[in-house]
Image (cartoon, rainbow, N blue to C red; front, side, top):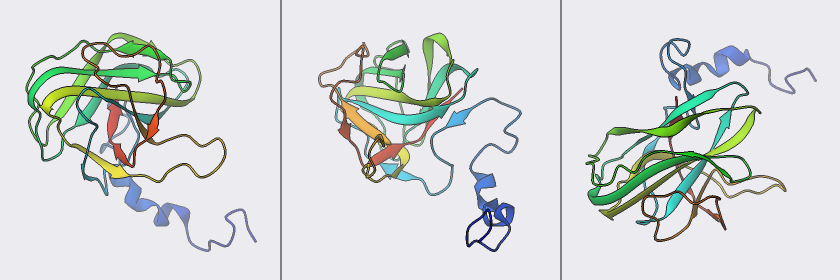
Length: 188
């Protein structure tokens, strides 16, 4: 057996399809994403006024100013509140965007939420990017499907929390519930 176990091929060739996951030149614009840009579909978000948070690996030294989510085929209808927030791995609020209130969010549209103050990451690890939309119809998002944690210590790839949220992110992610649908988030 070798360092690569029983794999006999060239790892660069086998993983070459992942080159389509990022931007054409990932050095040109700083970004972190929780999912590659392939294999994504239109997925359910969360109910109106419920926060959906997704695991996002960030590196020590990253400066996060914006969180971007991409709507799927269903646009927001009569939105009243929309915010994004960044949480620590322990679920503590680090920063929140302003409430975008009734701003339109069409289908198949990227929407960036500027954090009230940029967050400098001081320890590499998993953080949570969250989105809450209160609307007559919550937009679907571009994302994937994830499995429930199986091993001890594993966290949710996506989770929901809170009810009746409007303009303010909760101070903590309290009583998160596993969510099978994992939205794509891009941090810049």
